[in-house]
Structure formats: C-alpha cells, structure tokens
Image (cartoon, rainbow, N blue to C red):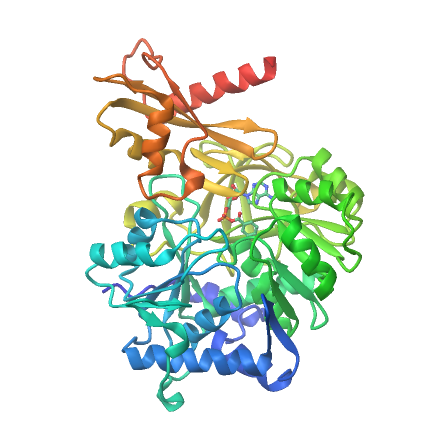
Length: 542
Ligand code: OOB
C-alpha cells in the first residue's frame, strides 16, 4: 500500500510556516473550532435541510465513528461520489474525523473512471448517494465497481442502500476516533483534469489546502456573514476552495447547495437564502446573465461572482458585469495548486482583460519558452508554478511526475500565458492536448484510447474546436477499417464505454487518412496540432 504523501523540501516548509501560511490547522480541528464558536449559526443548507455548525459536527462525528467501526483506518482512502447535497459535508468531514482520505470523484464519472480512482488510490471504501440530481442511480454502478475492485470493502449509500451500508445507519463509539492528523499529512486526493491519459491523483495536505482557502477568503471578502452557493459540482476544486464551500465554512459563514447550476434551480435559492457569493464556469455565467434579465427572483444579495475554470473573453466579462450587477472576479486556478484572482477593487480593464494574479506572495511563477528560458514580460510562454499550496508530485505516478515537474520542483501547468505589469496573467491557451469543455477537462489521449478499442477504428485523433457556448468542444477524426462504420453508431458505442458523458466526442468525422509528412509517420501530438490548426482556419472563414 502506498500512503499518499506530499513532500516539500524542509527549507520551503520552514519558509511557509515562518510566513504564517502553514499554521498547523487541520480539517477536523477547524470544524471542531467552528462548532464551538458558532454552534447555533447555520452552516449548510440543502433541500429541506438546514444544519447548524453544531449539527454538522455531530453528524460528521457520527459518520466518523461509523467509518471507524467498519474498520476504516487512518490514512486509508475512500472514494466519494456525491452531488450537491448537505450529506456531502457529513460524509467528507466524517472521513476527515476518522483520519481517512476522501478521493473526490465527480457525479458525471462512470465505472471506467471510478474503477481507475479506486485502483490508483487503493481505496477501501466508496460513498455515494442512491441517485443524483439527474436521476442517475449509483447503486448498479457500485455493484459493478465492487465486482471489478477486489480491494474495495465498503460501499456506503446515502438514502436507500439496498444490499449496501446505509449512511444513516453508521454508528460507533465517539471515543474510537483517532487524534487529529499531522497538519502536513495528506488530507484528500483531488482528481486532475489530465492531459495525458487517465486522471492523476492530486494529494493535498491540511496545511496547504487550508492556507489556499483562508487566503482566498481574504481576497474575495468572505466572512462569517457570507453565504456561498455551490452551484458547480461540489467535488470540483474551484467551488470547493476558491474560496468555495470550504472557505465559507472556515470563515463560519453559510453554504447553500444547489443541486444543479441552472438558473431555475439556483435563482430561487439565491433569493431565499440571501446568497452573497458564488462561482461559475464561463458558459454558465453567460446563461445566468441572460436569465437574470428576465427573472422575477431578487438576486440583489449577490455581491461577488467568480468566473473561472476556462477562459472568459473580455466581451463575455463585460456582458456578465452589466447584467448581474455584482462584482466580477476572474479566477484562474488548478486542482494541483496555483490560483489567481483579479482583486475586488481592481480597475475594470484588469477585471475584464486578465485572469488575475496569484494568491500568495510566496507563489513563484515562471513563464518560459521551449528551451525553458524565461520570456520577457508581456510575451506568451509556458506557465510553471511553485509555492505553498502547489503540489510537488502526483500520487503514485512516477512517469507523470517526471513530465509534470521540473527538477527544482516547479509544476508545469501546461498553460500558455503572458504576464502583465503587476503580475497579472492572461491565459493564451494550452500546450497540452486537452479539451476544456465548459471547464471540464478532457484528455485527447484518453478518448483516442477508447476509440481505438473499437474493432472498426484503425486510427483516431481527438482535438478541440472553438464553440460559442462551451468555449471548446471535442472533435474526433477517425480512420475506419473493416466493416462500414457510421459516426452516429460510433458515438453510441462510446456512450457504452462507461465514461463521463462530457467525454463522448461532440463530433466524429470519418476520414480516409491523416495527412502525413514526407518523413512518413508523424506523432499523434503533431497530428492533433495540424487538425486543430485546420479547424481553426475553417472556423475563421465561417
Ligand atoms: C480549475 O481546475 P482544474 O484542475 O479543473 O483545471 C485547471 C486548468 C488550468 O490549468 C487551465 O488550463 C484551465 O483549467 N483554467 C483556465 C481558467 N481557470 C482554469 N483557463 C483559462 N481561464 C481561466 N480562468 O479549473 C480551477 C481550479 C480552481 C479555481 C478555478 C478553476
């Protein structure tokens, strides 16, 4: 068993402690503290439920004692796949209190992805809700997962559990809970967007993650009077920590869970709960801006809207500001660490034209050319980052680590950016081959591997295509072989691969051959670049 670790060289750790970034706080510690200080304040709202801090803590403790009674030990991993319901918090904090490490799957993930997370993290447990906001039943998925995962011992279900363990039945001796974890130990594993192949696991420590949202609270003005709405999937790093629901709970504020991000669901919640701040990906922010013009719901409590996860164009930023009438804050972050924000009092052109600047004075940002040399200010280059909340390694993945980190510990973000005076970054694009589909990252290679598993696919190359609404969508070029293949049939077949729906190619184009160079064989990567260039040129002509 490989216990997840995240190790900063001691000289860096000492610096981050001395600067007051790492304060030795932990998830169990801060929840206990808020429960003592703000016992009667409402912490979490969702559906018909409204939990005070005391209640959230009591529920998490009960779940934790139940996890311990099941035999889950400190340091063990448990995959959590829960949508935007209050039990997300009783489950996750329950695991923290039991010393176990949540592994955050998204509700959209299916057997292929979840089985990978279980295998890669060597998870012993899986916690789900019986069904999602879209009606998807997770229990058949759990059944298949259990059959495919010999190490998976416990399946816990919120709601009707069938043959599994009902979450509500978890009980145990509160005295059995372990002592608080080491603040520098790994608290959970987040899922990477991934450029090459399957998602990698991102180990985040108590100290580093708590620093990221404590500092985000300051930058975004989150206090105990704030009401944060989680509209994006709760397991995503953005709504979790920028400043997110963890930031809001840390501040002693209130978290409102919106089961879906649609204006029809979210607007009544904003009006009823007096939501002050939330975060959205660009396509949703545009949808909200459109809907806000017509809605009867009072959205005037909304003070700050964070937009990030994918590039927001200046025109879209202006439109959103004008119609929602709150402060827009751009956020450019990554589950691996580095997060940039425009500041609340920045001039309009900075808010509209840039993706902000780093959280921390100790974030080190390098922008380099192909040779790894720094480029002059204002010129585009590859973004590398190192700092008090940016990981030094993925979990258990030597090959990825060799690619993704420099020998002196900088994370290669894969983003192409330019830096303006004042340290503000403007995202120009990606170096790697992924599709950023409305903030969901899709690895081209992962999808090609699925396509290549079809007997009538000779070769495949997946590229991103600009899309007015989604920002980018996916297009798969496929060379068929053998029996006649139809694009629609291949799409349907891809749906049967037990993958997240957002990964099924939006478009499949059948071609006779891929263009090759005089040298003959070209790399898949080069091929993608050519296809992408062709599509961009075609789009420009339209
Ligand atoms: C957030 O995290 P991830 O891990 O899902 O994706 C990270 C990648 C970045 O490397 C970048 O390629 C892209 O998403 N991205 C943006 C962006 N914000 C993220 N690209 C352009 N403009 C932006 N504003 O997506 C994430 C994590 C924390 C906070 C916000 C977003």
